[in-house]
Amino acid sequence: MKITINNKRVRFFTALIAITLLSSVILFSMREKTSFFCDESGWISSGYYYTELLLHGDFDRDKWLCPQCASWGSRLNPHLGQWLIGLPLITLSPRDEPIFFNLYNKKEGGFPPRQILLRARISPVVFGTLSCLVMFIIGYYVSGLWVGLIAVFFLLTHNFFLKLSTQAMTDIFYNFFLLCGCLASVLFLKLNQKFRLLSASLVCGVLAGLASSVKITGVIIGGLLFLCVVLYKKRISGLIKKDIITYITAFSFSAIVIIYLLNPFFWPSFKTIDVKSIVQESRSLYEEVAHIKFSKESFSARYPQMSNLARPLEFPYMFIQWNNFMNAQVGLGLTNWHGNRLVTIHKKLLSGFSTFFLKWIFFCIGITLCIVRMITSLRNREVLLWNIPLFYFAVNYFFILLLLKLNWNRYFLPSIMASALIIAGGVYESIIFIYHYLCQKISSPEL
Image 1 (cartoon, rainbow, N blue to C red):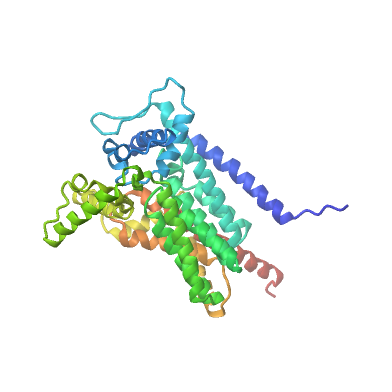
Image 2 (image 1 turned 90 degrees about the vertical axis):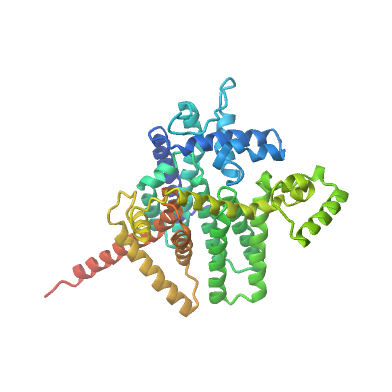
């Protein structure tokens, strides 16, 4: 029997193995060299704290508040990122090793012991490697092997990606799940059967929920990306209104379920629910509101049952708390834009942290080609997978352009990673153009 070998598949899996080995070697070697950042103490401390609660099945509301966790606690952060940092800290630690809990400050320090710091960096390194793999797969599907490889090259030569992939921070987890959502959107665009489209919608929602369980903005970025893809598919494939509603509902449902499932801070305590007390508190609350005597002060003490039932509202309220936190930082003069805000944003996106000085040229080439192809695709009603990286970059770019108040480097990482695919496309198309131009010159020399 003759055995046939699919060369295309062999090249794909060979590239996957090579990227895994290369990226893991680079990131694990940098784990010991990357400088300490003050926030690592906060993430390590909260990682220990919330992972211990999870592993012991302790869902006491007061414990999940953790006021001593400061801004790394439940009021501002969901818990998936903390668990991902905390799991190797607890499962790989010696039995006699004390738990580290100390927030960094300039006067007293608060550095974690070296062995704990390196152990806390294991998960970010693993997710940094996985991010390289997902980046390659997206590039491979939308354009081919070389675009995927070039995109990974830009990640592994980007100082900021390397830094956040080797520090005990949650940003790389967030970006990994967003990238996976981008890949799932590619599959959604390729599929045609309703059941498969519904399944892809659910997967996109789950990934947005996972991203939002690390940083709350994940559901916004993932939701906007999915909406762009659905509307584009409607234009190309003629989806009916009923199908659009179905897919958006499936996305929203799965995202919300994941967000609440993975965040015990949002759970009401079902054991303490008392129907009679709820009725009494409802009447009392109605009277307060009706007589304009309502006060937020000591609400939980006066209405324990209503407060318990209102715990799921902590998730949308978290957006308000983050906005208040950002405004407070702005009020303290910590914006750090060093001049014009728009100029600073674009400098960091196109030239900051990168070792490749011509990056901005290839980005302009890539984004121009993407826009021209999208217009042609819409005009001819032909599916173009390149639109997914374009949508992904646009959503992340306009999000920081319109809403970013603080010049904190880590907030640029989603847009930087999204731009890697655009730049890779610009480099690849430039090389192809030069190659064809030279071939034409050689084949038709001047007389």
